[in-house]
Image (cartoon, rainbow, N blue to C red; front, side, top):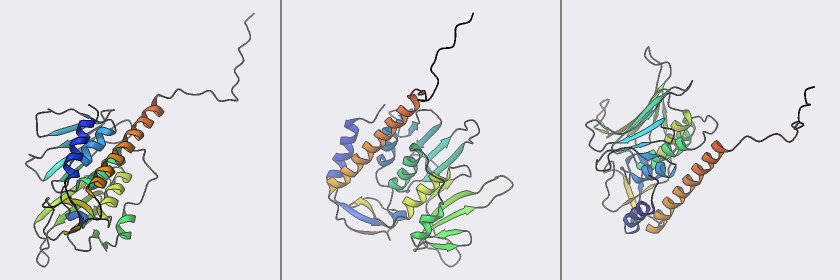
Length: 272
């Protein structure tokens, strides 16, 4: 089912009456509105294949290669799971994200999945430019609560996998309680990893409503300069862009091959 105007209106109704607060850092901003993710994928042509009366949501890409599962009743710490099936020489891959991952950060990942892949970026570029601390095994946020790790090869994996973990401050060498995590396996495309890390380490705050859940009490919240309608308009603009991008992609797939202008169109000589 395509994303309907009724569904967009429901998003607008919630956020139009919700005074936004700038919330930072992003890794502590809390989950926000899951529709940042699901509306974006629906606008790109993904379809719901789950029971409409279930709390679980499963969306499948138009080519059925990718499936996103959102399970708020999961017995594990992973509420979001995304799988890609292998196609030809391209391997399959898997990524998962915890309950308190900000929806806008995850949406950057899924938006990149629906767009043509750019040149292979360096996933560390944005992390370092955002002022995160380099460490031998990865990088750490300025508040030391978020750790990004690129785990090395092993006897079980021929490529490195990405692990992002957010924990409360610990005592000495002992880490504090777990807040949320993300895992991107060794075959997750580099441009998706880059999109996620870029959104995660972006210094710009995320908007959360008054009394809306954050990831930790140390998250800083200040009244936003944005009006509620601007938050709604930004969502509508993004959805419009994703719809146009999806239509353009479908036209490219169905566009008939053209005959080059210099091609010889003369009919072959009749046989004698």
